[in-house]
Amino acid sequence: MKRVLVAGATGYLGRYIVTALKNQGFYTKVLVRHPNKLTQPGKFLDPPIPNVDEVTIGDITKPETLKHICNNIDYVFSSVGITRQKDGLTFHNVDYQGNINLLKEAESSQVDKFMYIHVCLDDDLKEAGPLIEAKKRFVKALIESNVDHIIVRPTGYFSDLTQFLNMAKKGRVYLIGDGRTRMNPIHGEDLARFCIQSFSETNQILEIGGPEILTYEQIIQHAFDVFNQKKNIIHIPVGLLKPVSVGIGFFSKHHYGLYQFFINAMTHDVIAPMYGNHKIKDYFNAIV
Image (cartoon, rainbow, N blue to C red; front, side, top):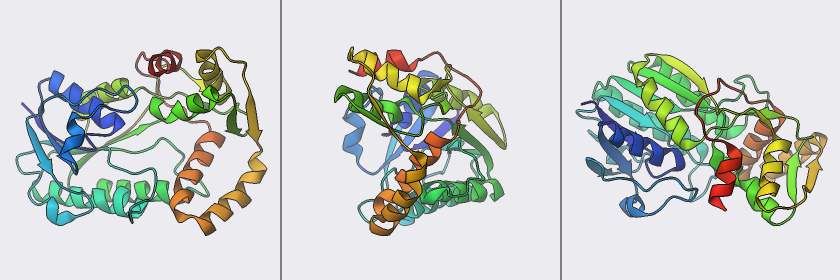
């Protein structure tokens, strides 16, 4: 029985990972900051966390709480990251340094493999922003480490698209660009299954997306269909984005990284090999 440490277990993907690991007979150990979250339901129909084999309390940004956490562990899985810089934590603190702290423990304990969830965006973006830069720095460190790596680059989670559903419910959706940019987002359950299958890989970077390639306008149409409303989209010209981005970067460092990430995602096609069977229309209908 392989022994897996999951960091990020209470997040959207983490819950599906833990569920799939337990269903497939892995010894599952989870790292959490707040153990009470293990019994709380997820926000986006993500499953409750099943009884795991071992729970350890620690903070990925505090290396002293991670000592020996990887002892007797075969695989480490990390989907740890933040979408907003708050509580004094930055993307550098969490997405980069936090994962570095975990990687050092994995190296010390000589784990077999470290799987990290990255993002499927062009590595040569001119203005990647601090969120992507922090992730890229960690990926570089992971590849250069003495632990075998598996880097998974999903196109985007279904849960990320609930913002469109929330706006559609109010009768109007704001969209960057003309809506023709394409992506094939992936459901957490499908992505978790792919990740666990990929533990058999060694030193690989794997891109993965869902079974449908859709434009943003098509995704938004599905959101309006849920509420039987006529489509009402306000398109924000891409040319306005740079000065707005500069202003946000100057006045609000906390929001700039996420803003820049969404600009990049919505103005570039994000398409990867298709996998899974969950469709966004069914997902939208299920969570309303």
